[in-house]
Image 1 (cartoon, rainbow, N blue to C red):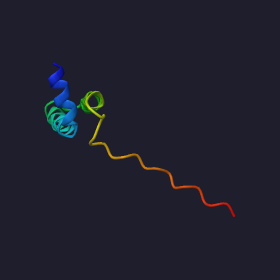
Image 2: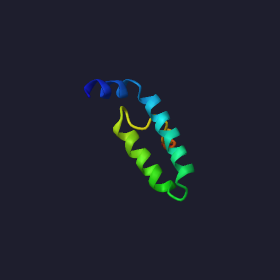
Image 3: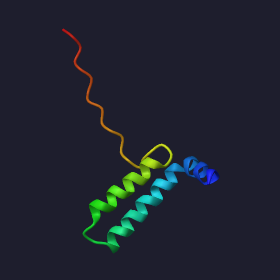
Image 4: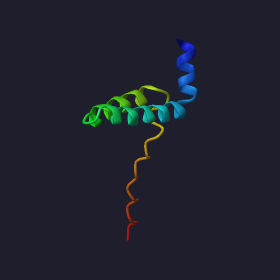
Length: 68
């Protein structure tokens, strides 16, 4: 089991991509449950490696203007 965890952590980006594909397939099969599927996929991605590596980075607010 430790070896499986190690492999998941080493290839976190691939795991997250696979989870995204599985989520899309589940949405097609179980129409109307998109929110629940998205929540499940997000939770799984957070529990593997560095979290969701497919998520867009949060936008940082612009720096404040220099004092005048």
